[in-house]
Image (cartoon, rainbow, N blue to C red):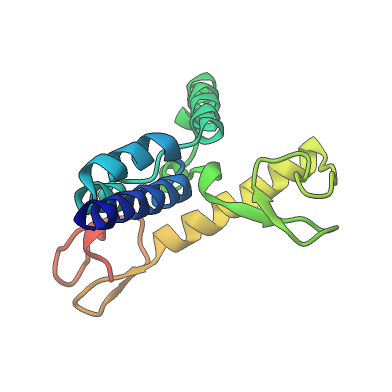
Amino acid sequence: MITGILLIQAVTFAILSGIVASNKNRDPAGWGVIGLLFGIFGFIAAIAVGEAESDIRSSRQKSSSSKKRQSSSKEENQQPSAQGFDPDEHEKKCPDCAEYIKLEAQVCRYCGHEFSDEEVEQQIEEARGEVAEKKSEWECRCGSVNSSEHDLCPECGRSANAVI
């Protein structure tokens, strides 16, 4: 009787650990075995472990980092307020299917709409301008608004990192 209960408990935690691991892009079979062997502790470990980066995400990051290295000479000539701009952090809306895609995308992954090189560059420059505009004006914790290019508040002397 006790053996049956322990077996049912072990199988339950194995299944639960596998489901949680699968949702976090981890190997469900491996985490299922951990849940089977360690019970609730294996299940808690499956919950506690972070989400694994998918192969697609890591390959995108590698290709974007190689692009950044190639265009480092371009970035040196840019304005200081736009140096923190990262196109990978911004999206645009496809005019055909209304899905959001990466700002640098030339073809929509949902409907296949193609963007011209000029159109993509224009969208990147617009987003870069918006980021530079947001950076040039910020509000400090003391309540004063700084619209200068300096990173220090004229009222209290705090840095731009201390913005609200």
